[in-house]
Image (cartoon, rainbow, N blue to C red; front, top):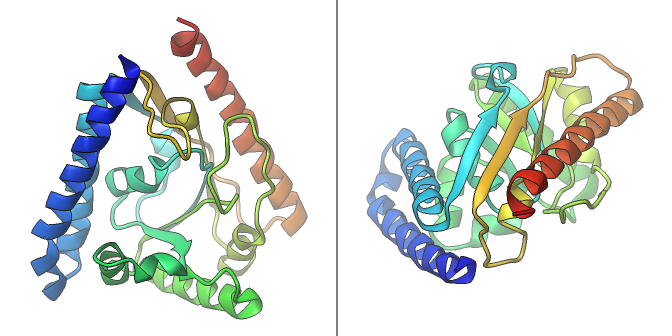
Length: 243
C-alpha cells in the first residue's frame, strides 16, 4: 500500500509542479513577489498531497526561535522536502544552492528571479567571496538566508561533516545562526521514490549568538543539530515506523 501511495503521490507531485511552473512563467516579466507567492502555493500543494495521498503530516516546532525578516538559518538536510518547506515557513527565503541549478530550464529562471544564492563549488576562494556578497545583499533586503551545512542530503543516522560555508557566513556577517533539526529522511528518504505515512517534524532551535570563536561555533552548531535530530529520528521511529 505504501508503494502504491508513493507512486500516486509522485505522479501528482510532478503534474502539480508542471502546472505551477507553466502557470507562473508570465510572472517572470513582473516583480519577483509573484514568483515568491507561486513558490508558496506550490509548497502548500505538495504538503496537501503528502497528507492526503501518503498519510504524511508535518509539524513545525520552535518557530518562535526564528527571527522575523533577516536571519541565518542552518538546517539539517535529509530529504528533498526541506528544500521546499522554507517557502512556506519563511517570507522570501534566500536559499544557498549549487550554481549548476541555475542552468535548469524554468526552475533556474525562477531561482534567478528570486535571487537565490548560487555557489560554484569548484570556485574555492572566489566562490566563498561571491556567496558572502550575495548573503549580505539578502540580509540588507531583510530576507532569511537558508543554508544546509552538510552541503548535500545525508542518510538518516549518518554523520557528515559541516562544510566551511556556514562558518564563513557566521564570521563575516556577524549574525546569530538558528539551527534546525528534523527527521524528514525517515519518511521521505533521499534518492527514493518512497514516502511513508507518519509525521515529519522540523524543529527550530534557539539561535547561537554572534561573536563566538569559529571553532567553538562550529562545534556548538553541530552538537545542537545532531543531538536534536537523533531525538526526532528516534521519536519518529517509535511512534510510526515501529508499527
